[in-house]
Image (cartoon, rainbow, N blue to C red; front, side, top):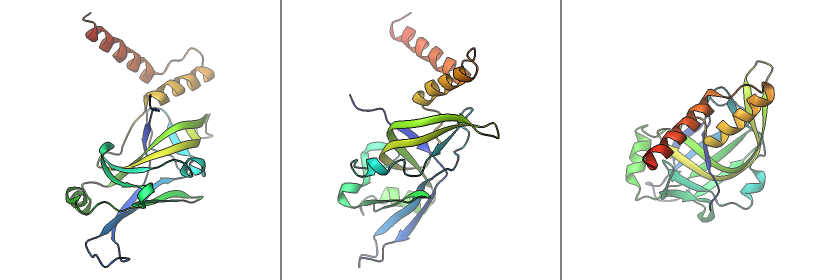
Length: 201
């Protein structure tokens, strides 16, 4: 069984630039910042996410990372093993350049027309700390993770993952044992209803 991939959208920058290193004037690359370290995400249901500098350092030496379109494993735009995806992990941010195949004109057209303007990351094996900041905001601070995917998409705003909902509930119970997060209760109720429908109850 494969590992569970958590997909996150963080504040990012994406731009399209001409590749001047080759005589092929049609060749263009996507350049951007996928994650700014120690920067909060949007509120995803009572808490925010933050990534620590160096959290991907170990995985980047071993994992192959794929550049996808809309998180579709069958729509590969680039990959690190071919050099079409280059990742630059700095103390400030996770930067990347992606060179999609020339035949992917539909994707490039969407990018040029600003129909695709976001990037989400797919990670596995997250090690994190849940904490309450001085301003009262609950933070999921990810200190280590395996990067497996960068995905260009028009809908990068992923909310809470199931894994996060469970961990968030655990954190809340540690703070106030009688509290169960509303989001987790909703999830459990949906799962129960789905099971009833599957078994005809």
